[in-house]
Length: 375
Image (tube, rainbow, N blue to C red; front, side, top):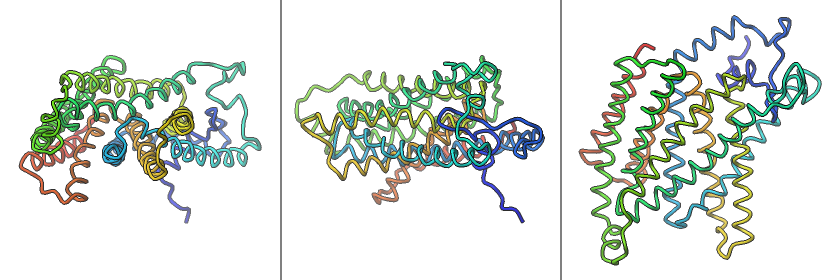
């Protein structure tokens, strides 16, 4: 009996037998990996069922990453704490490239050919910038979004607000994405989808209320008031949160643009994370060797561990955006706040209050409604 392949293995076989420069397998009818009927059946199954799973996995990975970085900023309250994530982004991407290079060598006898690269015109062999631009801009957006997360955390504290309150505003990105995908791709949402999205937004509102009440009772907030330090206007962290919504919107659009132009979701995710990893690596080395306060060794490995989570989060989000509706994928990924709340309850032994119980209930309800709604 032949072993059953995972969704990622099937996707890699059918669409992303590609190298660093985005190569894809031949479409020859005699090629044993080119089965249009099987591919069509598989893609239909994915679109109908697995986008929800990918979005939830993305949400969980985002929660792990944000929880680790938020906790780590207690030791190092600076955005440079995320620079060592380059170690994980580059390493995981390199492992993927090595595997795909070996598979392509066995398949074609060589690891690179222009005719199989999405960065080259198949007919003329000339380099084309379109897919490269999509990938590079997405890499820059990833860096800006991760860095902006630390900025939201810092300015929230300086404004006397909870980080989770500002994070709850990111739920607006799901509606922005839904509107954009409606006009660009005619993606319509039915009443159940909208009810599910609204339930998730209510979940985040209750988390925000709970976090703000907890923050105002904390020693950190009392010290901020008693110190006489000037408190930032609340509009500043709100503005950074709105900027994050903009990043999330364009992340979804760039993925769809690239996929429609022949880029596979898996390859696109690995390529832009490898590129962003190289930029992070430059910033990390500059910080370590040209700064008076280099990061301590334990913080480097701590941040690198968080990089594994963000790699998975972005990979799963790309699959959710490809195989499902943009607004729904973004909405489900925002339930990361719920996972962060569960981490606090589990790891810190905190008993949830009534607002947090309501938040978890609405999150579960919204997820169930979206999962059961017919597309």
